[in-house]
Image 1 (cartoon, rainbow, N blue to C red):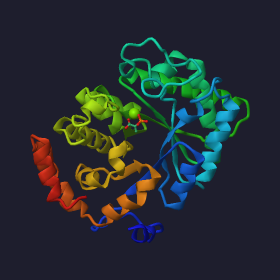
Image 2 (image 1 turned 45 degrees about the horizontal axis):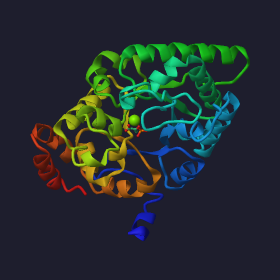
Image 3 (image 1 turned 45 degrees about the vertical axis):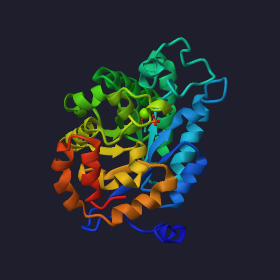
Image 4 (image 1 turned 180 degrees about the vertical axis):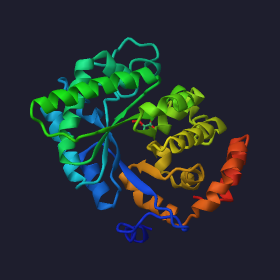
Length: 324
Ligand code: PEP
Ligand code: MG
């Protein structure tokens, strides 16, 4: 299997009927970036910046962050990179005292953009560092845990201020940097039609979308059987999100674990997804799966997949789509 996959390093990712599919990498370290590049990723679809903040006492300075983001951009050699603003909180605690330690329900608490907006100075430092890196190659900014349009309005306002300040201080930054939201809270998925005009792109975070839709802790082993990517409610939200993005002509990436699991490749193609982002270690497997599938045939099956009332029925339908 290793040899067979190695042959796919330089191959295109294209369905049998000729649609090019973009496979981006999720990354959080220089090693991930090197691997993504070596395996022919289309870019970095999700750069998790938390690792810069974890296991240390001080918050990284603007210059330290800038150097990390610039190295990421240079490491990808001109391919697009999507940098996510800090997603601390809940399962991603830190040592620098930013994350509250007295929350009864941290997963429903101050995490992601909520934490960033409580510390606008901290968010500004991160946005400035990302904007400075945008002078070195194509960069997009992605905001985690968005549940309301107002949060994106606040982030965009701050982003504009940061860009203006950097330009007047003589920094060369990109003329425009796309700003997008993670769709990982059910409210954001449901309210997306009213909010999409304010977003340049979106990224579906199924890890959290499943957790919050099904009210099942993503890390609770006792509930592993209920943490179900194939729950009809989850599929509906994913399908609606992709369709809303398509209607508004916005790019949509799916960057949860589902994107890198070849059992779901046919399903996601059926729901209309063309941009996947995954751990680089599974990129070749997914490329192999995509290249064996016929997108038009799968698209035609979407309505019946979305009508299936149970996991078992969805699995049966998937088996007949030739996935896995
Ligand atoms: C997600 O929630 O699907 C996601 C990609 O983000 P994270 O796993 O970092 O929460
Ligand atoms: Mg998430």
